[in-house]
Length: 264
Image (tube, rainbow, N blue to C red):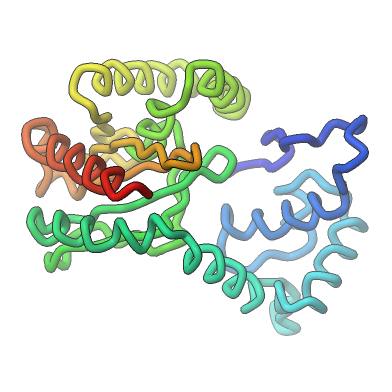
C-alpha cells in the first residue's frame, strides 16, 4: 500500500511561501481513499498519510462539513462523498481531448473487442479519464477514475516514453524511492519498454501489472504540452504477446496519430 509520506509533493519546500501546507494535507487525506478505497477511520488515514492523528481529525471534520467526506456512525469511519465526484466530473467534462478521442477509441475497441483507455498522470499513478470497451464481457472493465501504477502498466510506461529525458529522470527517482527492493525489477521492465518504444512506437506490459493481463501503450503529447497515454489490452487468454506486438500495438499507434491529427 502506498504511503503518501513517500510521495514528494511539488513545491512543498518550506521556503516556498506560496505553498499552503494545510491545503496539501487535506488533499493527501482525499488521495488516501483513492489508494485504499472503501471506508477509512482517522487511525487508518494517519497511518497512510503519515500525518498526526489530531491533524487528521481536523481534516476529516472539515472535509465532511464541505461535502467531500461522509461519516458512518455505525462504522465510525469515513468515505468519499458527492463533492469529490462533482470535482472529478467537472475536470473530465472539460477535458477536450477526452471528447475528441472517445469515438476514435471506440472504433478500435469494437474492432479488437477489447478495452482501450485514455489516462493521465497523478503523482506516481495513471488515472483513467476515458475507457472504451468492445462487446466481449471479458474485456477489462476499468472505470473512469481507476488508477494504474506507472512502473508496471503499459499506460505508465507509455507516459514515461513520452517525457523528455530530464523529466523522466525525476519521475524515475521518485519511483525508485517508493519501490524499494522491487525497483531493480521495475527498472528493468521500464527500460525494456522504452527500447520497444524506440523500435516499434509503443510499449508493452506482459503480466507486469497483473500477471493475467497483457497490454500495449502509446504516449500522447498534446498541443499544450501535456502528456497523456493510451492503452489497450486484456486477459492473457485473449491477448497473446504475439497478438499484442503484431496487431494491437500498431493499431494503437494509428489511433494516437489520428487523435493528435485533430490538433488537440
